[in-house]
Length: 247
Image (cartoon, rainbow, N blue to C red; front, side):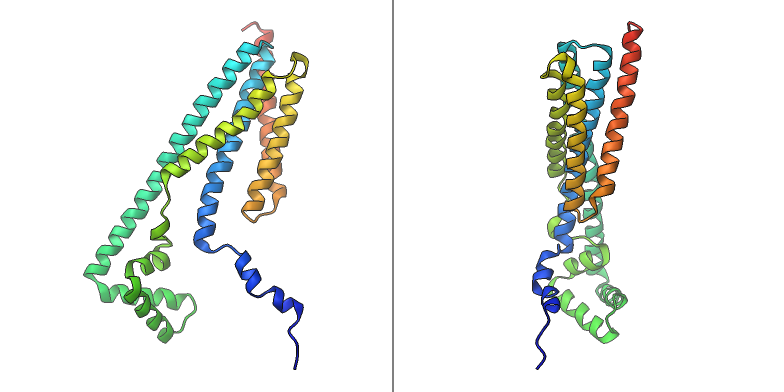
């Protein structure tokens, strides 16, 4: 008798458990998107702000005021924007589910045929697709149509408050780094410490987001670093020009 190879064992149940299922992956990516967007915005926008001010003045009070104002305004803006965006998405999902519920009530046979055709389109034979559609309908018709037809998990609808708080906290944490880096060191070291800290943080957030999402980190890291460096360079140049002009 031929023994199973190690390769086939590696492709078995252990690998299946390592792979994220659709609902879990979607939920994780939604949180990841909000958190990474918030952190990157906090790092880059606050760094650009304080570096720009540093180009015009080395006054610690001015730098702290600008940094705190940017942190508060940015975190509130991110939270509000995320709440509105995710609320719109949730409203659309709820409306789609309500419409589907009415169709199931008014046209059960048509909806059963629709589910059969959708399953058939995924590679099942007509007979198997019909039997699967009947069983799914008997168990939970709305859930079956939501998942197969709409791509929605009724038990895991997006939560606008979760997304808003995630963005708020992520932006605040990200913004604290350049704020502390610009006000804590001695005047002669502030700019260097801030630039190095910000670029290192952008490498970390780019790598973390890519790895958590299952993507290659190289491009994400490069995008973060180039975008952050460009933002700081432009604002510092503007701040320097304004400072030299006595504005």
